[in-house]
Each structure stands twice: as C-alpha cells, then as structure tokens.
Amino acid sequence: MTATAAVAAPARRDYAALAHELAPVFAERAAHYDAASEFPSDNFDDLVRSGYTAMTVPTRYGGGGATLAQLCQAQEILAAACGSTAFAVNMHVHGLAMIAQLDDPRYEWIFRAVVDDGAVIAGGFSEPGVGGNWWYPTSTAELVDGGYRVSGRKSFFTGFPGATLLFLSAALPDPLGLPMPVGFLIPRPARGLEVTATWDAAGMRATGSHSLRVDNLVIPARYRIGDEGELPMIFLRGVHWAWCSFASVFLGIARGAADLVASTQRERRLQVIDRPLAHLPGIQFKVADMVTRLAAAQAYLSAAIAANHDIDEDPLGHYVDMSLMKVTVCRLAHEIVTLAMQVQGGSGLVSASPLQRMYRDVVAGLLVPPTPDLVQEWAGKRALGVPVLDEPRWEG
Image (cartoon, rainbow, N blue to C red):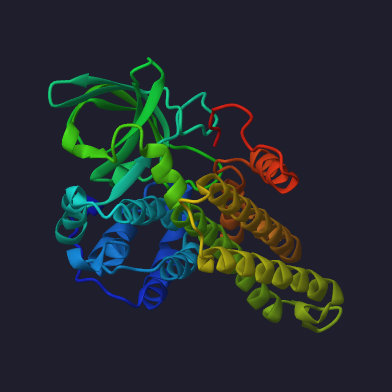
C-alpha cells in the first residue's frame, strides 16, 4: 500500500504519545529503507492512518489543530527513530500549518483532502542554480485562460514518491516585467511532470527528494496559494513553523544518537578493566559534552517556539531570528552525533549500526537553506545595525 491509498483516522491530540507508538516500528524499518534508498511508504501509510498527517489541520476542518510545540515534540520523537521519515513528513505538516495561518476559506479543500482522503503534501521550492533563493524561482509561470502555465526544473522535491498534493512555486512577470513569485498547491497531475533524477545521496536516503522537470503544466487559478506576489510574505510570516519543526528533526536525530551511545556504553566491557565502558573518564567527558549540547539546542528551540513575535512589525527580523536558531540547533546536533561516533568507535561506522545512518542524516541539517554563512552574515549585520539587505533581493 502507498500513502495515496491510506485514509486518515480521526484526529488525535496526543501527538507525542502517537509518535512514541509509531517510533519503534519506524526504527525497525529504517535500515532497509536507508540501504535501498527507498521511500518509506509503509511509514507514511501508518502516519496517515493514525491521523498524524492531520496534526496541523485546523480543528474546524476535522484536524488536530496542533500547536508548534506539539508538532516539534512529535517530530523530534519520530526523527530519533527514522530521520528520513520525519524530514519528509515535515514538508507536509509544516506546509499545512503555514497555509492554515492564512485563515482563508479558499483552502478548505486542502484540509478536507488531508482529513477525509489521506492526502499528503510534498514541497518543491528548491531549484538548480539558485542556491536556496526561493524568492526568485527560475521556473516560469504565464497567464492562460483560467490559470497559469508553469515550466521549469525542481530539485530536492522531498516526499514526491508518496505525495498526492504538490506545493511548488514559479515566477510570474509583474507589471514592470520583473519576476514575481507565485505559489501553488495542486493535486498531483497525470502529466506535465517528469522525474529527471531519483534521489541518491549519502544521507536522508529515504526522503524521495527527486529532481523534476515541469513541462507546460497548466494550473487552474483556484490552486494558487495567496495572491500574486504574496508568497515571500507567507514565508516570512510562517517561517517559525518551518524552521522550528526542521530544527526539531535534527535535534531528534542527535537525541537518538546520544541515547543509543549511552545505552551501549552501559553494556560494553573491556577485559582489561572488567566493567562497562561507562566507567571510563574519557567516555564520561564526551557524554557530558553531548548532554550539554543537547540541553543548549533544546533551550534555543524551546525559546523560539515560545517567543511572542510581532511578525508584521518586523517580518525580516523574525526570519533572521528563526534562521539563526535553525542553523545553531542543526550545528549543535551535528556536533552531538560526531561526539557519539567518537564514543562508539569503529563499530559505529559499520552499515548495520543505526549510528552510521544518523551520522549521515544529521549533516543535512547544515545544508537546508538558508545556509550557515548567509545566516551569520544577516545576524551579524542586524546586531551591528547594518542593513540586512543592501539591495532589494532575497537570498535563502
């Protein structure tokens, strides 16, 4: 069965408990999906049937109406079991949350499709050669009768194999002829899309992040998200849903690695000391470093989740703050898993070890745009009172 064949269960509210229920099964399947670079269809069937994918659908449409804190807690638990599954479903759950905050009845059909039909969203905003510059897509849109004709290329279309709805962007010329980004969420079409490269990478191997060519795809106007040109502000206003939930995925991988190593060191023995390796000071020091970094990452993420921002007053500042948090948590997560590998030693490198998969998966957090160097530039300028953007352009 694929995710397209599953139908969502009635919404639950205890999403952390639900994630704990699903995690052991996902952990058992993770090695197979990773080794085969295969999309975790069984996991997505379980996510849909359990109601997990309806988590961020508003309650008035039959969804769970999950808060950001609930979403992040559940995603962290799932990621410790299978990073690829948590990363792929994050495109769906945080995308729904960003659309929900628009509070627009035009999008009721999306929420009904998720709740009633088990619809799953995949996101396609990254493109070759733009460096994460989502505000200036090179894919083009032209007005046609009743809608738009879209053509271009998309990379890292995460979750594509299991998706029934596609969230993508293109540039429509504004009255001055300048590119104006427009977002669409569409039922997966029978034609107009071609997979040009299946996902094959060192980490996050089961996310199905295929590359696609969009070829004269006609999209009815009713599938546009926001008004023409509104997409950048939708991103700015909703970035806390995106960056907090993505940070929680990589924090979850790090926590899973730390827990795995700690449990292993309590059991492993060396003949020369005739007691568990947990008694060695070197092991203790590194585990203490891991615990410290976990606490710092959790505190930063929790503060971002709880922050009461006036987003309309300073949307760019909000975006920079959330981006800096995301980059910092992902960097700490990478450091934690690196320490875990040092503690585990050579046995952590073998293909049978879950730690090897976590080590490869956690690197992806450093690569999710906007990249660390760009975010540091923004944050430094903002702290120094220097304009974050010296010209009217967007990067990241």
